[in-house]
Image (cartoon, rainbow, N blue to C red; front, side):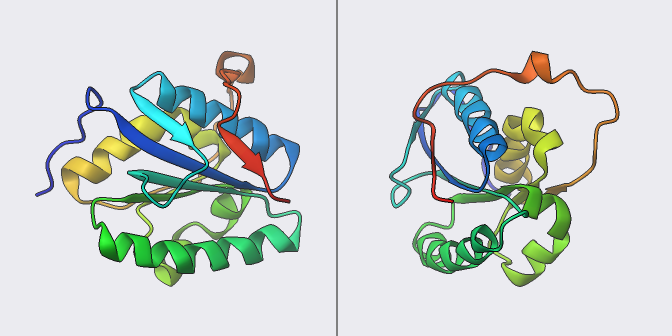
Length: 158
């Protein structure tokens, strides 16, 4: 069993964003959530403890970039098995378990409505050696309560 993730220990996270303005906003929300929980968020993903790829399904290019980046990240995961790899956004919402089937080193797949549970999922992966897929929709969500953002957490490559 892996040891529990220690949010009191500083950790490094990187969020790569491919897609639309909503993806950029969701990446900023994730970045703010992580920073409030002792993560340093940067664009440098090579030495991160957590890599999140946030994707859009409206455009074809972000889906292609997801596959390309995941192939590169596979090598990073091989070097550092403790690295947590997450895929978020609309592609994650639509593909769900298919992402983990195609890329078994991915630990977390979450749709936009799963963002608020990101820290729980990171902890679950660390402590239980499990994979998480949350692509459900929340019928009644107040996005005004989730508009937590921070600057510089993500960069859009669309």
